[in-house]
Image (cartoon, rainbow, N blue to C red):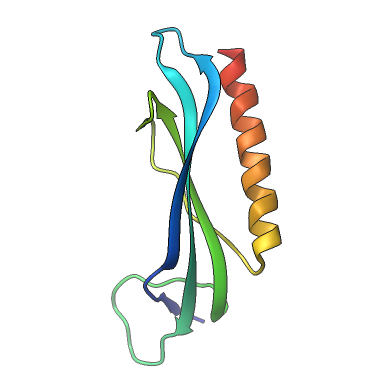
Length: 105
């Protein structure tokens, strides 16, 4: 099944400071963008990009590492969940693991 992603709604971005600096003295942290999105089934022939998500409403987030509050490193994928609680649990886990890695540096 091929699906198409509709425009995102309820978009919000939060930044987090891990309270430590890298070896160049830059404050390490993360930026989390949350949003809601619907996926709908594609019924016509589509030669462009498409998704394979089950049609429905999803709660999503996109993480990004930061240095001095600015985006840093490669682009990260979006993560999709069926409930807000699942999304929040994944965000908490991401931030915990990211902070542990940052503190090692």
